[in-house]
Length: 320
Ligand code: AMP
Image (cartoon, rainbow, N blue to C red; front, side):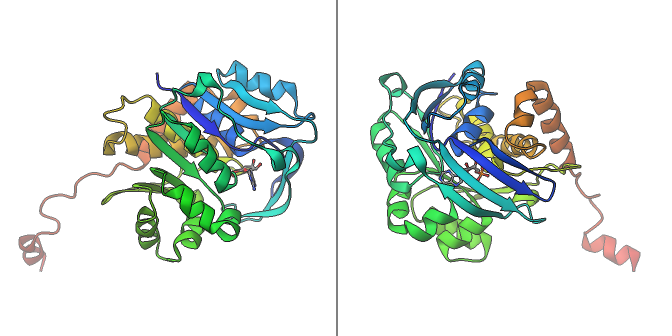
């Protein structure tokens, strides 16, 4: 089984949605990614936490088989993010970011991680992403995520990182901001010309689109009856997606078939994350539940061939 190496944030989040509010709950791009990917494969984490980060959370990751040798505990408080969502849950408003121990984070890959073939550069400063990329000499598939903050404040560094990235995950707002194109297909094509041959555009409740070369695939989001907190949905998507790729052999990893399954599984994983605040739903999630919802999503999107006579010229004449 191929393991995935992930770098990103480990955070204490304070989140407000129309359905409730939580303070200092577990969050961070790397933590969501690793938890989601751990349903499929081994994940090796590189991140920094502060003195106040609960040991219980690290044990939770260890129990899920996540390798945390690359997680450093530094003196000082953990990175904190405070955000709010309105009824449009696709749009997170950042109210406050406290870098804390993240300010001096210098990611160093432990020797035991160096043979990792798949690398996920989670949402951190693009220069840090580049430094990880340089160390991950065995990585054959390099995937990355980013956010509006870096697109607007660190554009040059981000464009430099993207040159070395094969697969980029962005939401539609980020895709438009990064490309300067409003039309989503044009935005994807423009991003492909920046480096990544594959671009996945997450569209919240509207699903996700994948662009690989000329191949396009779209999957709807699973229609959840209730949704509480979308924080971490993007990283859970990436965890499910790359987890699926990690279970394919290197030759078929980027086949259209594997990629389509990855989009669907990523979306299913993200849907569970949204069902509760923080990691609450992922803590109880089982593989059986994932498999069941994957099947439900599959059935939701199947439609049959039209009757052969329906749109033929002769049928039109006959009904006239
Ligand atoms: P998403 O999957 O896009 O919803 O990512 C949510 C996570 O991103 C939250 O748990 C935050 O802790 C984390 N986050 C927010 N802003 C930043 C940032 N500037 N750097 C790193 N991580 C961040």
